[in-house]
Image (cartoon, one colour):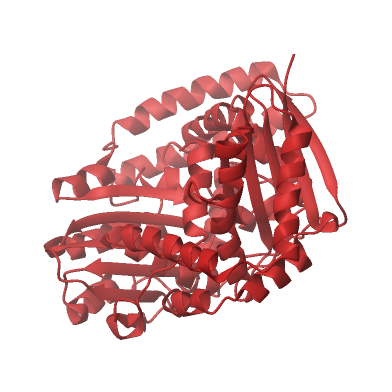
Length: 494
């Protein structure tokens, strides 16, 4: 997914509203919540629309859970998941395992040699040849793409995984009669990765990094913004990590990350669809509950570099862009609801303040986006305005216009008519998005994983309806100030 599409997804996720009250729908009465014997949390919603379900497993392990020097490690597990386990993806594990062990040992040696101050080129070449031969041998015992094939042969759709700064998620939709199969396969790939093709996939991720960040103007811009806005911690680097870190971690590093973070108490599972809840609970206990309980890892903290107004620039052979970001809190701080209102008020739809002024009326920008949960929501984050200027338009004039609109939020209460339009805009968009089992499951899982409380999803409509013009003004005055602001400009490289 491109950086721009990721931003659009973040914009949608950051305003997760579902008008349950408006529809006469009581969320709490429709969600069955329970814990397995090992502490894994599950939410099940019976939705009798069609004989299908969507399943989602989220792990509270994303980019912010990595250590400096090991960035990008969380992302590795969405690659490893579909490489299979000791029971899936192998024709003979007893014969394959010793070969994988040899590859792992050589991979560690190769990594150490490559990152050393004086790498031995001859030894690196020798190891490469040895690993190639071992990989060829291991292939005799492997069944490529078996995870995909098992699920797809049984009606699976939307089979995928993704990693963000806050979490890693695995999801699929299947016929209701295949719940047991989905649970068995998903539990295996989450709890028991075989680390097949680890060093091959490490190189794949490094290439993703080059194409998605180093050679991508938006990716490079986002990386610079994060480094400018956050002094240290997991929010200061992109989810994909740095190339040197990616090429420097080993299978042992991945095992240690998995051992620490992929524990039942650090996971949330959600199923939405046409199924028997009692039967589903028994299946989930059988497949996911058989893994041992372990202590949940401590929450890391990303320290914001909120030390004064910062400005930076980046030269790139691409069209100019501007990002303005303000440090802000996240839930459960009630200011979050006002930020949701302001993101839509400023950027969502042709009648929004910034889009109407800069894109349609004054024709200074070709596009404007806002996100009030960038780059994640587990720790204090950023309210970001991203502007793509039209060719030849003055950056200074664009910044002046944005500051005028920000000052307007601080100085003038939003009139009730405009406030009501914003509420309806947000509500309508989320109503449409929540129509599917998959997005419903994802949002429930997101709230429980990130905020430890899925009930916040049901409370959102009431919270949004309770935001007053005075609330918006107060939040704008507190957070939309120069000492809290970062300005980043991308200039065309000559």
